Structure formats: C-alpha cells, structure tokens
Length: 277
Image 1 (cartoon, rainbow, N blue to C red):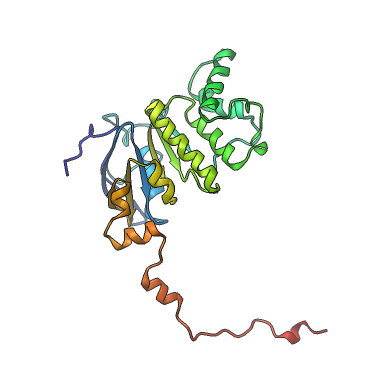
Image 2: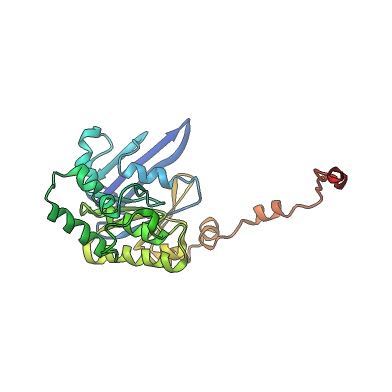
C-alpha cells in the first residue's frame, strides 16, 4: 500500500488516535478520502464510526495523529479558523434535525444566514428553490416538518446540507427509519449528488443494501482499527469471519451457544392466587 501523505485525498488522517478514559476508541487510523467518490464507513456499534466522523469535521480533537482537509492540517486549528473549512462541508444528521418551528424555506436557509451576508430576497428564494429541486421537493417551501413524511424530512435535510454548495457531505445513517423504497430514494440522491455535482460523500451506515449501492469504497472499523477496506465486491467476498458476520447480520457461534443454554428456570413473579379477591 502506498504511503499516505496530506495530499493523498480531499480528507486525510495520519495515525489518528483518540483515547477516552484510558481506552483507545480509534487507534492509529491512516486513511485518504478520495475526492468525488463515496466512502462508506461500516462496523458494529461502539467501533468508533461516529467518533471518527466527528474528527473529520474537527468537532473532536485527536489524542494523537493529524487530520488534513485539501492539504491543510485542521485538527490543530482554533475554532474561529474552522468556519471557512466547515462551510465546505455539509452534514445530514440521522434524524434530519430540522427545526420544527421553522418552515422548509427557513430550514434550508439556516446555514446560509449563519455563514453568508446574502440578504437579497430573490437570491435567497433561488437558493431554496434550486436545492429543493435537487431533492425533488420544489413547492414545499412553506411546509413545516410536522407536515412531512420521514423520507421527505430526510430530503429537506439533505437540501439544507447542500445549501452552501459543499465539496464534502457527511451522512449519518441516512436510511435509518425509512422503508426500503424511501431508503432507495435517499440512495439515488446520494448517487445523483456525486454524478451531477461531483460531491465527495462519507456515509456511516448499518444498511448494507445502501452501502453496496452508493459506495465506491467501504471501510469497516472494528475495535478502533480498519479491519477491511475495498469496493463492494471485495467486502461481499471478504474471508474474515468478523467481516462476514457483520455484513450478513449473523450472530457468532459462541454467542448463539450462550443464548441457547438451557436448564435455568425462574420462579413466576406472581402466583395466580395473588390476583384472587
């Protein structure tokens, strides 16, 4: 494997390590995220996926190691200097995280008002209209989140995530809580953003159907380290038992044996006579 340097990808980590209370959650992760491609992060709960993503946008600082965005080191930047960096990144939260008291129009404009001085109404209208058109919801400007389905909320949240024309979009469990059809709508939108806008996508998911469809590359984390790294076909046919159990959703034989242990019986908490008058 070629050595990773700060210019190996749009986002690069070198020996990224994070320790909480003496326990290493991430351990010397070195990875280069390729520009214009979709990288999917998978792994069991507690393996460090969310912690990893938070480091990439400098919401967490590493215990050791370095993080680069477009060749610039960002893990050591002061918070005031991270604004311009984060303006180039969008984030689709797991639940959408829309503001319930604001219309779709105002939700999408939130990052625009926070990070720009645009005040011309026609320009603001055009921003909202164009972003909603991308996700197929132009005409929903006056709706409130309570009037939207779960899939529509995710799409509005995605429109907000791209309001500032970011180069990178992060997706936290983008299909969670959606039925298979609505999930596939989100998958198609992720593919559309890559194809039409050249957006670099980084998605954390447990949905392997989604992972296989949207990914150019799948990285599996396990116990804070990279256990598998390759395209969908490589991951599907990976020989490692831990990888296969995860992607197939299978419980290990040891866990099955423990679950099937018999012979222990518990006395009833209540006796039928307890309910007699």
